[in-house]
Amino acid sequence: MSTPVMHSADTNAFDIAWVREQFPSLTLQFNRHASAFLDGPAGTQVPKQVMDAVQYYFLGANANTYGAFLTSRRNDEMILSTRAAMADFFKCDPNEVVFGQNMTTITFALARAIGRELKAGDEIVVTTLDHDANVAPWRALEEKGVVIRQVDIRESDCTLDLDDLKRKITAKTKLVAVGYASNMVGTINPVAEITKLAHAAGALMFIDAVHFAPHGLIDVKALDCDFLVCSPYKFFGPHMGTLYGKREHLERFKPYKVRPATNTSPECWETGTQVQELIAGIGAAVDYLAELGRHCDPSVKSRREALQAAYRATHRYETGLLTRLIAGLQTLPGLRIFGIIDAKRFDERCSTLSFRLGDYNPTKIATFLGERGIFTWDGNFYALSLSERLGVEQHGGVLRVGLVHYNTAEEVDRLLAALREFITT
Ligand SMILES: Cc1ncc(COP(=O)(O)O)c(C=O)c1O
Image (cartoon, rainbow, N blue to C red; front, side, top):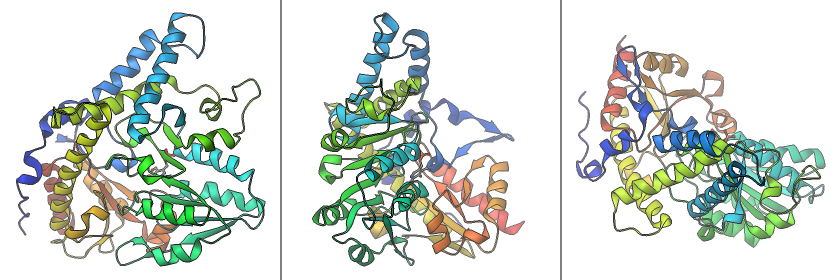
């Protein structure tokens, strides 16, 4: 079966050669194959700007905070400038940005702090579509008698069942925790609409944007959410987590902290010494995206406008790759894609795709691909409820292909060819 030809307009405008030059690790060879990094949903590669920023930190700014000497002052300035970069990324104020070890740790800490104000019988709404890091921290509050309501999905297209969601949000609901995009099937949830429903019931809205962040521009003011988390290592930065919180909430809720540490927000939420060298890398990741935006549209002025231009371009480019991938996969016998496959609905999904191929164990396929330099993930990726709901959990889960803006049409074709080879061997 021949591979479908992608419409040239989908990729022509995007300077993929420039993009790939920014990412030194993309030249890695394995078994005499070029590496195809289709593993982005578990962590993306980083541009050299990020590596340089981490090195620069160690060379000239390596000290703890608030000392009366050069390197400490540089460290303080670097943290402020990264807060400003993340504020542009989220579209909020710098003092609404919190750094932490990763999304999971931040969410457990926030849930514990919010839990201080909850009582038995209060309710929290979570979903079956979510990564467990947006379920387990809220479920931990069951110990206090908090009731957790879990919203189901529509299995046919792996979207949230909004009728079920509306039924589960009631006057008892104190918080609604929903993912922006599914890290398994790529579904993008209508989080702005869900935020309105949560607020109408008097509940807080918490959004897990970890999977959305590499694919779409976040605007917390437009969403009007109360909290939103994402992890820079999924959007071309280092292994850390970041939280946006409305200032009033960050000031009102009380985090667990040591006594000598400041009570001032947002720093009171940043327990202990942060991984400061990686905070430097986060700022560089945002600046890389802005540089990409300026490369795509030299007329942009502010960093926020540059980020908008970057995401406009990467969204178009990734949609082209996704179209090619889905068309190719549909030619493979016995292959079942989970989630939205109708091109007219691609605005409701991002370019992360999971499938099963007959009864083959996904680990076997991932291993076969890995030997050919094609890096994909198999399993449930901690989207445990979804894997169970789709009935694949006991069969090794699914095979996940993640396309980000440094991937190429040629890599998609290599993947499709390798899958054809897998089927015939
Ligand atoms: C959608 C989603 N939420 C949360 C997480 C957990 O993020 P972290 O590794 O930063 O704790 C992940 C990680 O894969 C994810 O994909």
